[in-house]
Image (cartoon, rainbow, N blue to C red; front, side):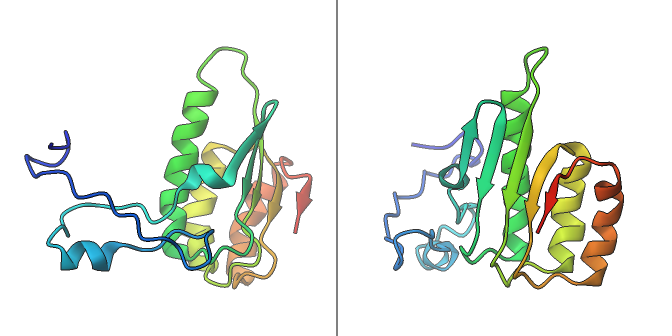
Length: 156
């Protein structure tokens, strides 16, 4: 069949290549290109596998999974859509914890261009873990304004 956004192209075949570690999805863009399906956008992460809810607290646990700056845009779009859906009814409060620690591929660029704009829209992040990443003074400086607003209880 065709997908509504595919401009009449047939749907790509189901790709079920397992992850070598069993925990981190593979980037399938090379496989798609080899099969002539390079016009499709394939998410390399199943973000829902890393997100849990407890009462009104969303927990994002992505410590040590090999995230890079290039993954953060997709993650933030997913979290934004999820929060819009989950907080759409009146009187709904939320808070979140985000653990991006132990991902050396996250740098100042990813924080400034993806995480910070997300935190400006959804500021109630009580715990943010960024230790053992590649962020430096620039990212910390960029986050200072958000931290000063008082939403974060813990920063690591």
